[in-house]
Image (tube, rainbow, N blue to C red; front, side, top):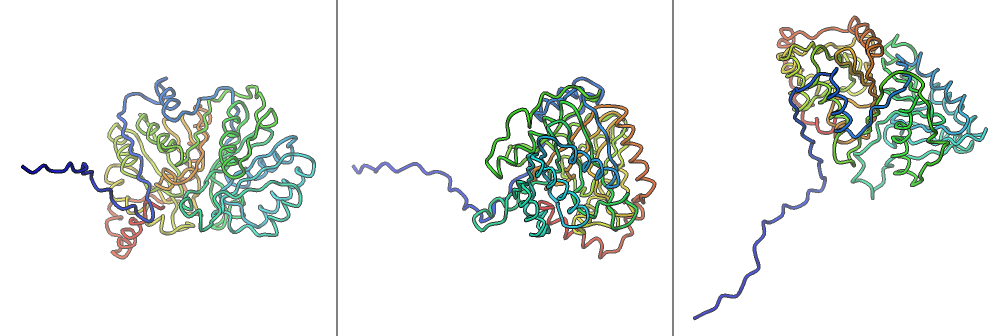
Amino acid sequence: MFLRKNKPPRYPRRPALPIVRRKLPMRYHMKHQFAIEDLAFLQTMHALTGAAISAGNKVEVLKNGIRFFPSMLAAIRAAKKTINLEFYIYWDGTVGREFAEALAERARAGVAVKIVLDAVGSVRMSQALIDFMSRNGVDLEWYHPLRWYTLSRANHRTHRKLLIVDGEVGFSGGAGIADEWLGDADSKDHWRDTMIRVEGPVVTQLQFAFMDNWVKSRGELLTGLDYFPAVAPRGIQLTQVIKSSPTEGSSSVKLLYIISIVSATKSISISNAYFIPDSDTIRALEGAVRRGVDVRVIVPGEFTDVPIVRQASRWHYESLLGHGIRLFEYQPTMMHAKTMVVDGIWSTIGSSNFDDRSFRLNDEVNVNVYDAEVAAQMEAMFHEDLAKSEEVKLGKWFRRPAFDRMKEKLAELFKPQL
């Protein structure tokens, strides 16, 4: 009799690791169970995003550079202790120099000025401007600079737009610090955008969002009352800050959109520079239309800074239009805002686009406001933009040239990176 030798167990063979790992999208599905006006909405938004709904805040919505740049510069020039600034885009030019001079003056006066800039988005900043700020005591860090030994994180950018002064006044929204945002969207070279100015306890949440990437870039913890003062109530608005990052394991910004859209019962007004919805958000928008919700979306028209994104966005038009979602292309200039208003009471203003890159790859931040007065201001701006937009009609869309269809199909292949 022959005894068989015991053989080691056979395990399934692991597939070889790819050279470039692609992060799979987070899938979220939610049924309509409550309305925006219900307490369950705020409780769910708080629980699933992990961000508290803060009372006692004062909110000011600022439309276009003619309004938000002077407000931001005034806050910087009034700083007494700390200035924290984080932006995807900071470029040379009239605006870039004016901000640099204001920041440098405060640094010379003893204010702690700390800046985080994305190494890709702000690559156009000149060395002369960098040296000027450094000489004047401004602390500048680059987020994920491109090095051969950091290629694994090269696709992970900070797309946040943050300015926090003395831990008491905060700004966020869609704009960058560059001449493209000058003016009042009054020419093709002056982009349409929206920022928000907040005072009150919610500013602490904005400060925490800045600290997140300051620690990652510098390794320095910002602590104490100069950064986190006890902020008394300044207004009546309920406000929330959503901070999203791929390192956190879930997409808070995608959750924000899904929960808001699925809870809508009346209207959804979206303005977004890069509108490339994924299957989950398409399902949510289509479900809203079936419930009788008026869904309107404003996207860039001819003027866009990334043409391939516009082509990828247009690939979805046929399906969206066929399900009753109304689409409008903004005509005067680049539509760069990232805003949404739901049911005349819930508004979000921030840095996040409606696409895979914001959902999966970028660090983003949005400020949400639960207030009918603020929502009315946002709706008024939305309707002003509608008047300057051309609606996309399904019948005409079917008749577009074959060459346009081909460009859209090709652009769609790059969707995971757009």
